[in-house]
Image (cartoon, rainbow, N blue to C red):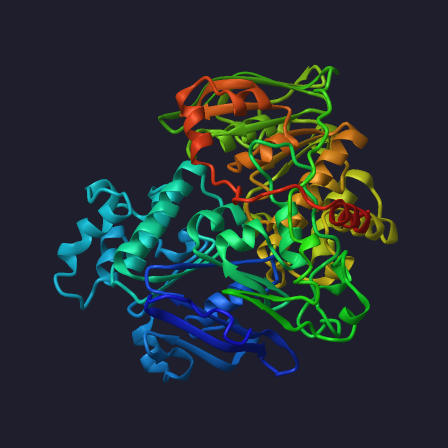
Length: 611
């Protein structure tokens, strides 16, 4: 968007991006184009959109970098007067970490696993006046103490939240002009997420740093960003003040994203946007969003939409001026009563240890057939350990697990094949759970062939249907995991579990890497499967906003103990324990001012298109 990001007022512009274009290496198609925006000192721009929209490509371009297979074709990225795209390689290397810093999504991969934290922090301040003496103050800025347990630790000895705050300390230590944050709170519990968000906002304001925050979580962006850029198919389709974009969006794609976003106090019938974003080189003529848009008109088919400009708010849409389709709110889901059938899964007095450390203390719960039980708590509370005890993936635990009334062997190797088929586990990290040397078809076909005995075309039909059920095209069957986005990999992992038709699905943070549209599609899928197949769910999540739309009951864990359990709506509305109240208070919220009910035409059109 030409001049689309101009920041008004007397704030000093630290970052100015103009007409950024990133192409495939052979120049056959653009991945990102016509991207322009400004960010002032002490301000934060949030970039949102689905997986494949170009968010991370833009984030990398701000560092003068692009991933293999792409090239920076044209445009400018000016940071405090220096155009990074015009800088020589040696000059660009000097600027990285000093003028512009980067905070990645996965701190475990960003930190050197064989170097202690003290040394890594020292490297980040090398060459600065009194650099080493500033390390305690730098750690204090991100809420960590400069004690030996932190400084002398290796990255794997810290929690995920501690690792991310170390990355923040290393990024802010040189006092850069620009800091780029790529999904820095994905996978963190709400308490740690709150600390990270508060740290980013406070340090950006106090140090006068321009921040670009890339995320698929609209609620997080609503809390941390002053302005929001919405990306689709490599273009910025809407850009403006965060309150304006989230309260009264003008682009139908932005409205679709907001309809897909959960709200912690409402059982919203979240609607995923139908269809798939186009890939590079496959964009349709005219408006790229037209094939998925419920309010498209004839001219959207052949003519690229112009920029519609209001004061400090720009949109690419022919109908941007139509006030009748601007308000957004998701319809409430009619809550069915909790299942009254027999208990499908019962856990009694489960205790578990890692070496000498006890991580679970006499945990018990019961899930009825067709019910969804949510398990919540901070990182380290024992959620994943509990799930792995139930599924037989760890053996060092005591207590009992009963499935359909029969007690299960403690270890998965002692369980019957039919039990292994009926209880499926979906891991949080698809990077580790998918074999990088197998295609998507091979990954999905293996379990189907093992449990059903099917071969050939029959297997292909099953895996294709499983992919479509998680909003993926069967065209991905020949691809390898490395060729997929993080969200696509997670959907493949979910499809692999669903392909064998389980009766119990244990979901360990399965939506943490998904954008809101796909997350809504997955939640809706799981809800429908509960009704159609009587599927029983154990749903581990940090995202409390999802609970009203998926769960019937909830177990709250703290330090391996159950502190509260019961009906999900009763606990969310009137939690009895201070710990639960703290979790709810720390959850980011997407409640922009002026939020109103949507016009019936918009909701009806979107629901009809989704069918």
